[in-house]
Image (tube, rainbow, N blue to C red; front, side, top):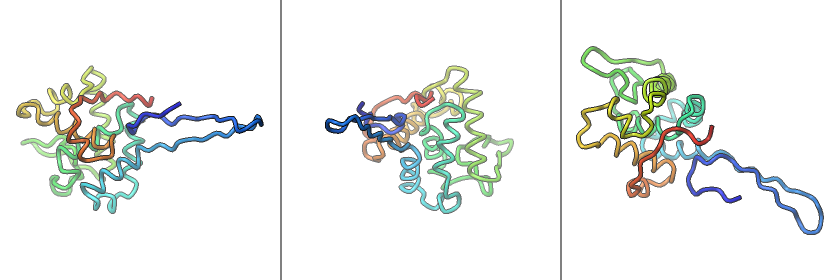
Length: 182
């Protein structure tokens, strides 16, 4: 079996019979998703991993728990806050969750922010049939001019999956956020 060039395809076991013997060698591919997120974070805000060194692994675990695409949360964080660079003071709020005139949601850590955002996205968006950045945008940030929010989220999701900033910019694709890994 051949793996897809995109990151996020589940690991595959490959069996190969060697020579005339019946000995089998099993080769397993590692999950490349945490590394792709780590490289994305390092490109855009390496200080984030100094604060929470295993955030890239936490993001994959959160996405798997809530059964959506592993690149969604970091893509939204990139669009909303430049990957946590510009956030309300002492909030750990990278995703713009509950940031409005009545106040701002605050979290104890980036991990708590991402886990809360995952729950909100799953229950209030994905489970209600909003499964592309364009559809999520209609509720998450409905006043985004000419779909700029969705275009940005799609771009960053593609950048993570291709592990290439330029390919992310060039990709003209709509990502579906329901995970194919579950």
